[in-house]
Image 1 (cartoon, rainbow, N blue to C red):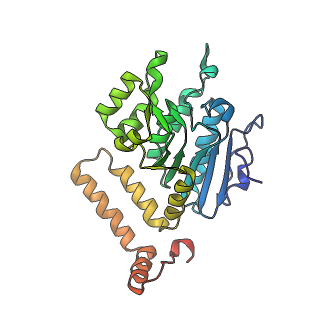
Image 2 (tube, rainbow, N blue to C red):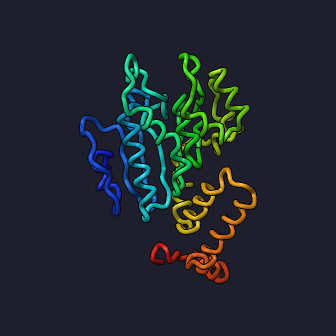
Length: 276
């Protein structure tokens, strides 16, 4: 049986998430080899992000990111839609006290994880759904995928998702999308850089990518993603110093030495950081 976010200890060998309200199962996660599979499971609401789902998703992804046995995370969704954005029914007349904090954690997640987050997007990914996709490091869109910053249609602005979308698409494009609220398809998403690939079976293709990433050197992946986070906003020379320092650490590591030997011997590497 696939463990849910309410029983996360079965999903991770080294980390257990705090127990959650067992009222409903909005998220499922299970570990397959070095890939953590996470699935949004609120199809009757088009996987809209209520407070409980936001908190469960952040807790699960952050725990997977801390687990040294996880090399990649695959995010999918049940039903016909990836994520319809914020749950409007939850905020009608009253905004939950912790909602802003939950959204801030969720929509900045991509800039904190040092494990690659790969998403398969099928159907609608609107508003917060577009923001969620923008926080993923690699996105495979289905041919029926639809994206859009549609908040303006509700008299709102995509405040918390704007930064992540802008980082991926650029300021001018993100502003245009936020102002118009228009919905665009998979081909435009790939053109804009929001989606990296378009596939007839996005789950299968995203799983292939996640598996490939999980087979890479954990040291190189985590050091590299940490480097990308550290140099954001830094002066060119400071970024260069950070690059040299981290590269020296990787040079001296056992994974790099094994990578050189494997290349010379024309064989697959056996990464020491994995006990190879």
